[in-house]
Length: 600
Image (cartoon, rainbow, N blue to C red; front, top):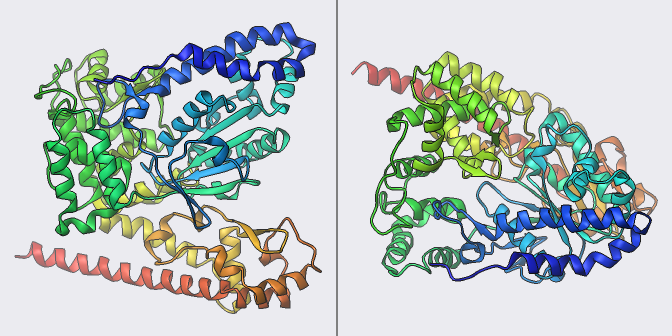
């Protein structure tokens, strides 16, 4: 079906030959040791990841690994209003700097883009690519340097620290730091400092960091922030045609496009402009050829399709895998809901075999299900394929499915249980993640709007607004800047070049209370009259970064007024207050309506 073939070994050899001499020269004091590690450890690492990425499974192609570039759709990145489309030449991507963050919502295409950069780096012999899945540092007993040393050298050398330092100083590597939002908040400051120190020390190399919004990845020093753009109308059509390009019949793709282009469905752009949700719709189309009205319905359709006709896209006709466990759909649903609930609140998104077995045994026991463990794992990974074996770890096809099942479980609990979860568990959740929870919040809001609003959104918003002192303009602006941990970095002409903030200043529970960004755009702040006042404050000496609320004076007061910063936060304060009042009214209205309906 797929004609394209990759010759892994020659590609890796060509890449390593390109960088062999420079690296051997800088490590000449340990040449024999390093040659052995270079030719074995690093070669094996690159071949392993090249094989892993060059053929892949997707949400649509689940039964077989397909050639990556047969299904890869290049998403668009934007940075300071400039859009970057099809990324082919890596020299062009990094021409303005060696430090990039790629920030995108759940399912926006970050992971596929990282795979593309990895494969392109090898094929173009651009740098030696090293993938660092940042979630692995949560439980790693050592530093980032130690972790990277193990990746490159596999602990093969007695003098590994000196050797790796020299190799890294040469600048031959491209580091792909994946999943900044998956770092536990208890480790966030420590790991962030290690990342920034590592980048500062070995700054001749190239670094890319990916994250969901809200994890404060934007504040990393040196890095230029790129955001993944939603698919346009034309890109949606191109994406669908790409998925079907190797199918003999184009009838299915034409049907899907006709449904999407129906004027009655114009309000569904939010779902369909996301590659993951668009893939879900394609995958479930034969079973559910209509667009669902809510995001959670997408996930339900996916699960139901997996349980019934999940082979229908890649096989002619449709048939069911044997279920060795003999469990019913509702049994799998219960297992997945409890498994997702437990793992999300433990901050676990990848599960080794021992952890998976321990969790499933405990859940089976509590649900009084008598089933062989191996049969259950087979059904979850093969018959239903709701879990994927990725290397030695099991994972959901996407984190958002795990979030859906967890939200779905909470929906079915009683009010006392929900109150405890939305207050205690959700506060605990922040200890595992300082960002990346907005998709989970939105699912809870869709599935359980009344109680999620009552016990989570309103209390959190009230706690936040209580920290804002509105007794004067100065105190208001200082309060917001303190809560958002807002600071600015400057270019040589004294314009604001970077703006860093805490997780609250991006996507968080505050997204439910406002119509504008938490923090303003650079263009709103870079006004001539406002910037002139900043120069006076610092005697025309450009600081690397400043936190305005800690250096208040008349000039800064003038700046926040003329730049629009004060106006911005006044509007935000009002929006949050009004949002709380509106939500409280809706809760009371729901209560009255429910009471009246019960009396009919």
